[in-house]
Image (cartoon, rainbow, N blue to C red):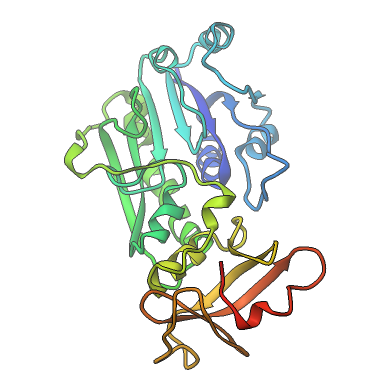
Length: 302
């Protein structure tokens, strides 16, 4: 009998991986996913699109960790659970349902960058290589034994979206080369090295606030980690908010410039002092009533 797959997923990574399974003719019995958040810019494909095209049942519970949902999921008689960019924790009672185990595809080279928003965090920390890891799901997030992983190089000027686009095909690659082993119960597993593990939580729009006492590179890495379509980096100015969508840490306008961190060194172009030099703000957006206050160009970024 063809193994019954219960798929948990969201984001374009979830879309690509579910599309792979459906294209192979695998027996996906249901998709557990999320309703799109009206406060979030949905710039990616979602697995619900792929599921509905094939008539796969789609469920969007706020949580599956209730007695009612455990009964409903058990009734689907899953042989295996696959989770790809599903945003909620799945309790151990549900993870224990399938005879072939529960497996997750995570957007980092585990054991580093466990937790939420791994690509954004990796870009923020200036990583030069990102990847995808297929691992067994256990009680602790992203801590189970690894089945497979692969990575790609990213550039020092890549935004988080550009990094995401580079690593997206890796998810499909890893799942494609391991799905038959998962479905036959023969996948080899390697425990993670806990000494190398790092964990980061979810990011909020407020986390994009710029701290000018950091270095130019650190600030630039923050800007590219949250650049559009993410919520963006910003500074508070006179009761409004200046969004900084892009900047240059090493341009003709910044070389040799120094000042107090946050000091505006010029306005044409915008150059602001950092801990070790200056940053040129090349793409900005003012969010506030009217125009920015007239005296801010002579002052200090907050």
